[in-house]
Length: 304
Ligand code: PRP
Ligand code: ZN
Image (cartoon, rainbow, N blue to C red; front, side, top):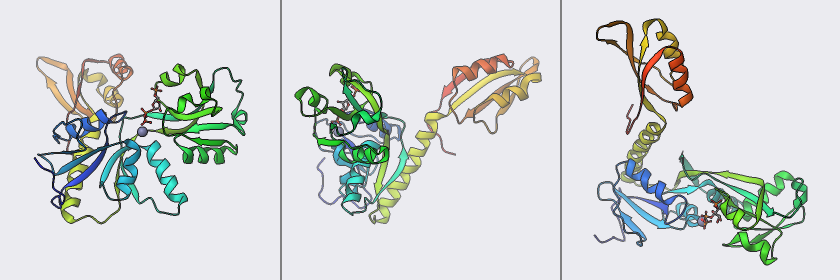
């Protein structure tokens, strides 16, 4: 299949991270939406053959600008990168022109300030006047303004964590998820600057109606997947006497189905969609209230 310079007007172009924290989950999400992407790891462009979607695989840092500038229509990116680029544009007096469509439940991490382990740290004032190596100077600057502490941002594009050992910074402001990178570099996390997660964004350019229709279709599927992620199908038995109590305990249930049980007049079966997470703890409470044979099943898709 060859890529065309002028794709048909219904085709939507999405920017995804090529490799990193968000890559697998982003592709998995499209897959859950029933969109098949042919896998060519090294290719910049990938096309779906069963949905009018083209995928551009790039560095996550480039995604906000690609979307803002209309090279991509939509994108999946971490709010860390998104806010950094938006702050940058705002400071240049340009509107970022980007809209968040959905918060996605993956890609969680935080932008934190970390200092060498041996440095005595009492509170944020210890950072006053310090040189802080970072890839996120705008988020750091915003944090400093909020906290009313002056720090000197040292802009680095990679390997931020080695800056203190090289003597070019006193601290770092970098992304942390497991904390392994900091630990491996003898650094201790002391302040959280920003909490990040993946979002789906779109630009505010004028789209042809065909493309708007594609986006609406994707939107509906995405809603279904995201709702189904949280929701579970629950089946259980309950004595008629404790029925009301049991139903009250079901998280996010509006209209349970009550089914009679064969050869048992004292109990019924309850089937329901729980629109909130069913924790073990919820099941234990149900059991204590008189429920039994509790089954919690995943829901793959949902259209209400
Ligand atoms: C971040 C950060 C660290 C690592 C921290 O990089 O720069 O290297 O993740 O993760 P850990 O706490 O689990 O060790 P990332 O993978 O986001 O790369 P990028 O900044 O180049 O996108
Ligand atoms: Zn990155």
